[in-house]
Length: 401
Image 1 (cartoon, rainbow, N blue to C red):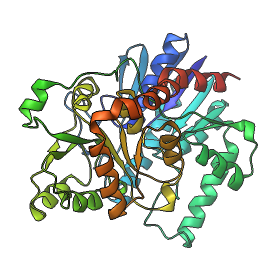
Image 2: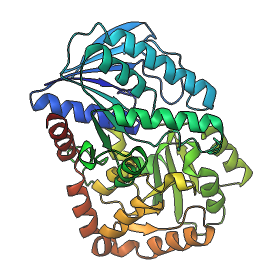
Image 3: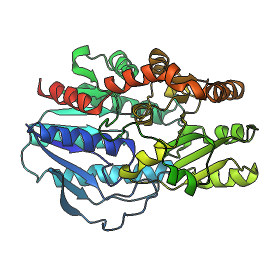
């Protein structure tokens, strides 16, 4: 089978959509399928073209057997609704136009959260007379938290959303909640949709002892490290987290943030505003180095803002932490909470609930000498069931049926 995969994010970008797409496509290549990925020039999240690339109309490279075609798009940082929308729309039109000349395919896959990729997938399916799959990684326009859901614009966007669900030959979602929501609203058959969770590359994210050299270089010896690795986004309730950090009086607890995103400047300001001595913020690192950094975490912090739109969201960073046997301090309600509690893989607090956050943190700290007894079994079972190779196989089998 020859697949055209349309995605706004791809390595060397290191966010969750880029990693998932790359690892799925790599597995499909190993299984004997052909894959062409059409994407934009790497620039996420800073909105700056990565070294070694140019934002050209067309450029091609081979990445471990995957043919990667990069097209021009309007590039901006990952903040500001209007500019980001122009960015995503420009990629949708560029990818559509260039893909018209890429030959025949057996299937087209268009992935969100950049929702406009689905427009490209839809149009290409008509022009090429090829079935297409819509991979839904985020609910849109529901996920635009500042958009009035009673507004005319929201109703128009929702009609477009539902029309695309109905038109797609198949749909893959990353949560059961997304699947149930789409079936209920779009009135489509259950067998048209498959849930393929985000997972972890269990060959890369392996259990390791703490890197003594890294701990020493960061001056974190004898610290209980609460680690966050991922995008510093508006949806992650980071202002709440920093306010809570200011209330933590235990000198042995230290918070380590690794990544980049729209909230970085704010985070640096909060360190000064709250006079925080128990916080370290580092630049994002490549996937090859991230394992060493996660190795020094004692627990992994996974927060989201308190919003009904996030009840069906499952942050992908959770699975990499779990694979490395890091208990989770989870500030997410809904399906993600159910999973963590099912496997006993950490402690959950209500998003933006100060008392529950402090109690959950204290519980994890107080049980630090007994982590293996309390959490190891559940963490191990969860990592096995969410191995990305198994999930990639599940997705290609669904496409092939």
